Image (cartoon, rainbow, N blue to C red; front, top):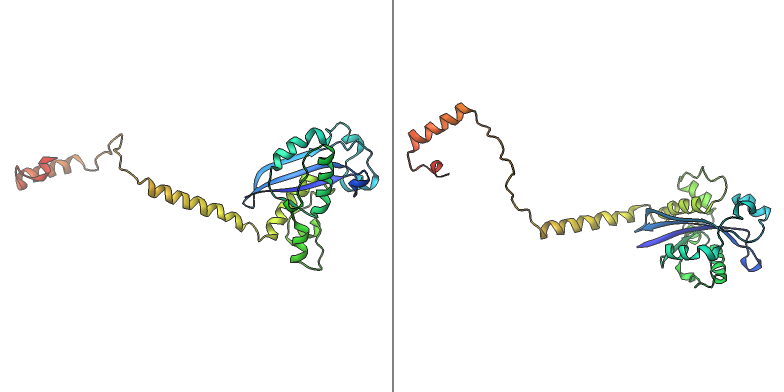
Length: 231
């Protein structure tokens, strides 16, 4: 099963009042294991960057000014996520921004049921505890020392590790090993080993004296009808 762990950075909290998406980060999982494939894109929000948002992710208006607009990159984004479930921490926030941008670009919006909300999962598993991404990293002893500022791809990578812990560690990935073993066993049964002639015969392990003694034994003791003479 293919899943996409996703995170975004924005100019604020409310797309309905003009806040925009500025960064997208995605990590691909297959059968709950990272595949090494990812998607990352900075986005020009076509507006200023509030100080409150800049302090969170460090992406300035100047830095983003030459980056592509969402309408210019949404095709590649849609191609990457395809129809996979989206693993998101506090999914309602990211989904409303993504759908606002998709709406502006006249693209089909994402259905809410596609989202797997790790914040809700964590709250159910650890009721009453702190369940921010940083808190979950500490709880599961996941190194997040490179997270001085929020970053969509860094956070998606951390979230992928947290998600795997929330669902019980990486054990579900062992399913792949089991499937591969079953396939290998079936192939082995379907294609039994056939004996093949060696391209170069193995050298004899007998010494010349032993070979002569064996030949004399056959001639003197076993006679002309000995089985050895028929080879």
